[in-house]
Image (cartoon, rainbow, N blue to C red):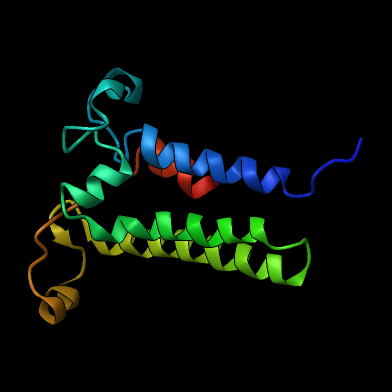
Length: 139
């Protein structure tokens, strides 16, 4: 019986995608994430990553999904240098994109005055990461 070298990659990609789609993206105040699980396709506070992007205008969260897609291209490549390049590109895009946006956008919009001066008022804000963001970043 031969093991597939892509099995761990596929497992982590599925884990990241499920976190992005099935868990609340932001930290839920005064309760646990699983108590609002039924609201992941609705409310602004409990919505998953995809709903946050499309319904609430937090387009920077799409970087996490872009990272998963880039890493997913690695499944189409044979193990080796090319595959590792796609994995690295996907991991860096997702992780660094979400990390930078997490530190530059806060609960009141831009976290730094110079960003506000450069780009203007930000129409959307964001709170601390929740279960979905944590697991997606981990994957």
